[in-house]
Each structure stands twice: as C-alpha cells, then as structure tokens.
Length: 387
Image 1 (tube, helix red, strand yellow):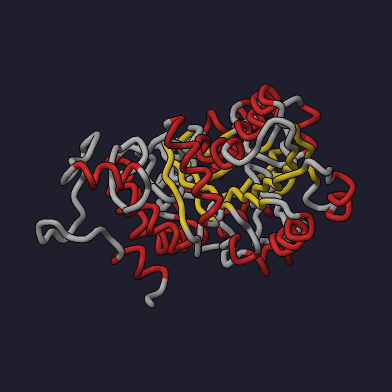
Image 2 (cartoon, rainbow, N blue to C red; image 1 turned 180 degrees about the vertical axis):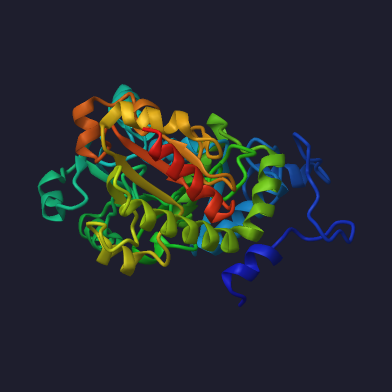
C-alpha cells in the first residue's frame, strides 16, 4: 500500500487508450451493451456509469482519491462546497429531527441551519467548542447529528475531534465534520470517530481559484443514503471540474506544506506589529487552543486571522492600501487573499453573533498563498503603516 502522497498522484481510472493522463469524459450519458446491462445498472446489481448527474469516470476518480486521503469507505462529488454541506445534513435528517452544531461556522452554513432547515421541520442548537461539558445538556431524544467545523472560518477555533467522536458514539449521533480548512494532510476526522467529512474542493483542493466543487466522504451506508438524495436532487459536479480537482490533488501535499509555512511566518511577524491587537493561528503558542492544535493538526493550516487596532475603519483602510494581495471572497489559492469577514462572508450575522464566534470589526483573514514571503510581508507592512 502506497502512502497518501503517492496515491494522490498514481491512483487513476483504468486506461482506455494507453493514455498517461486521464482523459475528460464530457458526456451526459453512457451507452448500454444490451438491455440486460441497462436493467442491472438501474437495479444497482452491477457497477457502472449511467448518467453524469450521478456518475461519471472523472468524478469517480476524484472521489476515489479523496477516500484514500481521508481513509473513508465511500464518497460522492457535488457541485459546490455548500451543496456538500447541505446534502450531508438534509440527506440524513427528517422532519422532527434535531442536530447540534458548533457555534463557529461559515456564514452560509449558519444560513442553512437558521433559515433553510427550519422550513423542513429540522431544529438545531449550537454547542460551544470550548465548553464540552455543556454538550450533554443539549442532547434530546430526537438529536441525530453533531455538525462541526474545525478549524473554524475565520476565527480558527478548534473542536477536539477525539472528544467529539466519543460524544457521538455515546449518544448514537452521526458526527459530520467540515474538514475544508485543514485538508486530509493536516487532520483526518474519520480517525477520531467522524462518520461524514465534507470539503469545499474550491479551496485548497483546487488551489488556484479555477472552479467550484465539493465532496462528501464517509461510512458506506451513510454515503448510500446521501447518494440517493443527490441523485434525485441533482447537485452534480461537472466532469471538467472533477478532472481538474483530481489533477490538483497530485500537488496538494507539497502545496499545503508551503501554505502552512507562509502562514506561520506571517502570523509570527504580525503578532509583534504595533498596529495589531492579536493574531489567531493554530500553531502559534499564543493561540488559546495551541496544545490541542499541536495534538490534532499536523500543520497549522494556510489561514490566519488578526485584529487591527482601530476597528472597522482601520480594517477597511488596510484592505484599500494593499497592492499585491488579492481582495476577494475565496481562499486556498496560490495567490494570497485578504478578506474582512464582518462586512462580507459573515455580514448576515448580527454583531453580537459575530463577536460570540470571535469575529471583531477590525478582523482580517489572510489566506496565505505561494508568492515570495518577503513580497507578501512588504505589502502587508506598508498597508498597516498606511492606516
């Protein structure tokens, strides 16, 4: 059995024409050999592709690679990271069910919990990642799932996955972990007891801001339920994006090492800058959960957050003064990106809710890219000096 880095490069579909690189399968459907094969495929008696809305060789290869990286039994690719999150929840829960969710979540995940799931009779409660004893008081007879994001976006709050896994086992819950911001090279939640893992492939997996996609991985019986849901609701990944993401996985290991090294160095420099109140980066000793981060995460990740003295106006002035860094809503790119979460990704939350999850008016999120470190630091330093 090869190591993850090798599998990400060498695992691919069976060759059709002695090709070295996997071809694109740009087709909406697949031809049956005969009537009996068509019947057997639709009856799920034999494996094979029928229709690209729910199966395609490019998507299959991408999912197979991700299963190897996350040590998952099965998986499915989706059209976006948020379709992966929604499918992973809505495909397993029913009217009357209840779930628990970590309070520090991506803004769109919050909207699913607060605005969309209630339409279908599904309720939820937030759990505080740092107050694990309080989780027990929130479990109901109808609780079916524990949904976590760790590290969180953008506050980089962590949830102890070993504790969460034990909690889920104790109460018979599906543990569903958004692992987008760590990637499988930093942590593998299934090893700690997660049953479902989701990713936005748009971020670190693609790595160059080219396409949108998601993936759900996990226990075979749960993926079977989710595949039924996705097959009939249609959040399919395109063959081109699946091909692109599969190729991107070949370099994910080396990219993540570089992203993490850049982020660690930028965080260390920002921490001693006079214009900065505080910095959050999991592998900085000043992070409130540093010991957990060192135990749970092989590297600190490619994201860091910091708070600029002077609040909202100083944050805006910093962004407007940047000359090299990109100001956009994405992350996980080769190009370093700066974002102001309070006015963009988490703007739909109330100010109290933002503060509760560590999003302050002057907070800036940096997605560390792969440019030369000194060029990045020169741009950040001059923008801080311009405030």
